[in-house]
Length: 354
Image (tube, rainbow, N blue to C red; front, side, top):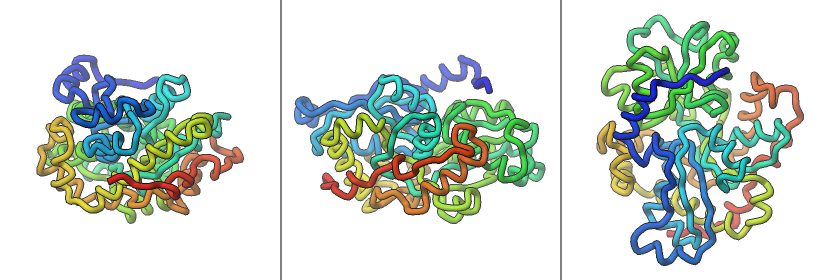
């Protein structure tokens, strides 16, 4: 399917509002201020995140804001890419070392004969929400009504694409009868909904709160809770992770361990602090659209999505495989070695920074 995008004018306007966030593709240094000197001689690694300003990817920027990369002894450069599928392509091309994205990409990659693995599980559940336009309330009551509709995803090959196709299939709708459009996240997603370029779409906080606040859409499916995730997907669906090629992991174990030390510490910090305290640490651009109070409130309500330990949920990989096997030709009917798609080795050996 050819990815359809919003007009460039909309994208440029969004970039002006949210520079350094979802529309920015510029690199963001993993060090700043007094921590820069400490990290100068540390091993360097570039991580591309599939939407830095999304709350589901919060640990990446929060680790930087807390100074945990420098404390762990690693110099991290964060790059933003609105779609996880494109971030994965950049990793495979050697443009970046690792990806902050959904774990399920590792299963899809193995199905394509490529080898990568998640080294820490940051989210126990997707944290994704399917919203539909307010004017369609009562007309769309479940994914069973999706035939012929335009569905917003971040981009083709992204995890929102995977999940949307699965939800259609599960509800007896052939994904080929829907029109999946890559509309990114944040302001571009909201614009697509307002302009009726999409009927429904999958996104995360803080975009969800902004859409509900201005009445643009209503929630069709909510995967910000364990119960909602199980109802929609049939089980625990580990989402945000740090994944790298197996070759990189095997060749740079010391660097990977330092990274995991920083992220385990960050996950512990999240559990010990309120949404308001977390929001205080984040760059203002991250909550510019919805407001700091609403951003903090959303964090408080969905804190349960974050994995407090970093260990892969036992039933998670099987759920992800079941989802991808339902529609993805790269995975369907193939023998997938799930233990090769993730490792808990580094999390179990972690010495969390604080």
